[in-house]
Image (tube, one colour):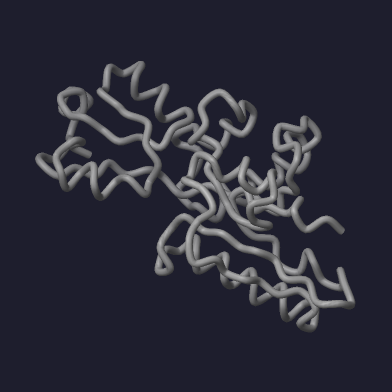
Length: 203
């Protein structure tokens, strides 16, 4: 088994590695979010499940620093800089076309329901298309309905939103907001605090 072909895009598949090896295998695991973030904690839980499911023959080494900025994570895993991580397909516009279906608004009110549906669709229709060639996708997920956060004024209408500058994560939301005339900039989530606290972005 080539462990460099393992990636979580974005995250977890417990027990997938059960019984893989008799000798100990150590997976180099990278995260670009802080330790207290839900995605990082879920990744750690995945690692614990893998170690337990393999009776300790597969373990994770949680790297102290991300091997890449968020948009470069897929390539970093594919090129062997780490064995396991997660990414956001929307951070690289135009590269992952089919998975944008999970980014449409109004798909559901629960991240659990939409993620289960997305995983089923991905397995049946998108995985065979090979957009994630070079890595092994262990699982996909999406978050719940998006929320507009602002630092200056509330948004109660499309006209209000059109007056402000927004950090957008990418994908369909980026395109849809531009079509509505919003002033948007594509940046990863890790840049949000600096952009908002310095006034570069309004929301």
